[in-house]
Image (cartoon, rainbow, N blue to C red; front, side):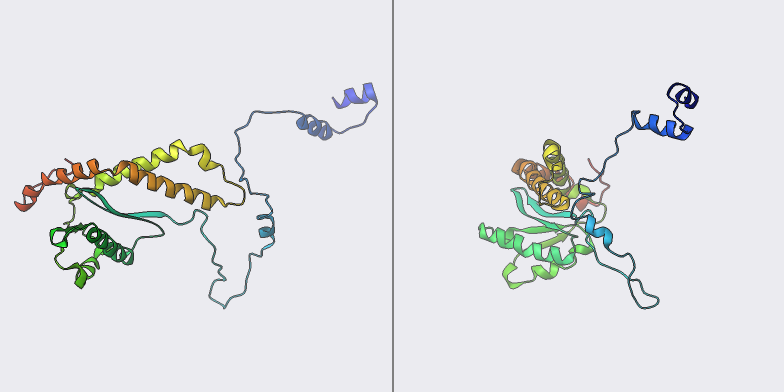
Length: 241
C-alpha cells in the first residue's frame, strides 16, 4: 500500500502510518468493559492529587483512616414466639454482647406493654458467647418471674427462629430482585453506598414484615415440640427433620 500511494498519489508515508490510519477506522466486537460512573467526576478528580506518602515514627506505618468501600453490614436481631414476631431491630455494624444486652430489655418491656405476665415467659437463646450477659439483664427487679433457657450445642431442631430467618432472607432476595433496576440507579447527590444501604434496609423490613408471619411463627414453634420428648429422654434427634 505504501508503494501504491507513492505511485498513484505521489505521497511518501511509512508502513506504520498506514497501519495506524487503518486501525483508527476499524471496529471490532469486544466484551463490554464496565467503568464506574463517578470515575472522572468532580469528587474523584481532586483525590488524585492526594499524596501516598506521609510522615511517621520509624517502625510505624503512616496510616490514614478511610471508610470501607462497601459500607457496614446490616444485621438483624429478632425474637419470635408462637404468637408471631415479638421484637426486631435492624442495625448497621457487627452484633456483639452489648447489642444483645440492649435488645433483651426492649423485648421484655414490649411484652409487658402488651399485658403479658413475665411469669409465663421463657426466653430461649442459643448457646453462644454473645448471649453471656442475657442472664444478668434478666436479674433486674423489673423482670421478676422470667425464665431463661439456653439451647445446647448442635440443636437447630429446637430453635424455631432458624427457619423463620430462612423465610426472611427469601423475602429480602425477592424484594431486591423486584427492584433491581431502581436500586442500580443512583440519584444525583447520593453516594452509591448510601443508596445501596437504603435499599438493603427497605428489603430487610419488607422481608421481615411479609415473610415472618403469625402463621409461620406458630408453625415453627409447634414443629419444635416434636423434639422436646427426645431431648428430655436424651435420645438421638434427626437434624433438620
